[in-house]
Image 1 (cartoon, rainbow, N blue to C red):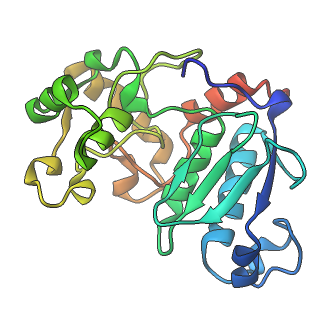
Image 2 (cartoon, rainbow, N blue to C red; image 1 turned 90 degrees about the horizontal axis):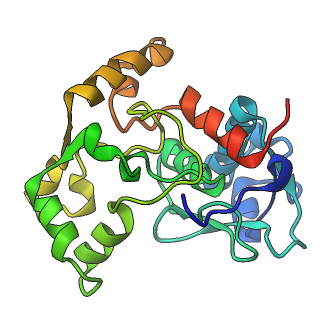
Length: 238
């Protein structure tokens, strides 16, 4: 995404809100022995960091003193800042959220935008008319419009791969939970013929996973192209 900064050498400093560590039963201030922790946000965060390290080679380094250290905290929603900021990098995790959502937010921290916001998306997917209309006329005056203006406009990119409908960073077509009072959100886009062809090409990498993991918007795993882009963007050297 334009303006997003990489993490030099793929090294990402992080620290936890103390209450999260206490809730998990952690003995220290970092992710050591996280697999033994109680289920919850801290364990999900450590699992997500370990997975991104495994597939991309980035390194998460415990360091609470740096201004750019990623703060992992509790909150009412699950969100992540995008790329490296000079200060204020954060992953917020709500109680009861799925692991896949946490894995997705760490993708943002590593510099990934939403796949459905790429500048060439019109070649691969088609938004429903109601969402296209909202994008054209919405301001930030209502909750729905704030969501639309932040999560759905096209954005410029500094680096990219081919369109990846298997990306962890792609939204599902069904976004009903975002605005349950409006049934139109149950389907916000459909793939074009080119998008369908790309989906058939990428699905094989998740052949061993459940069928839901081979759908657009899956939150099961990091795709090969996700990992490739994170490595390239952050200058990870094998």
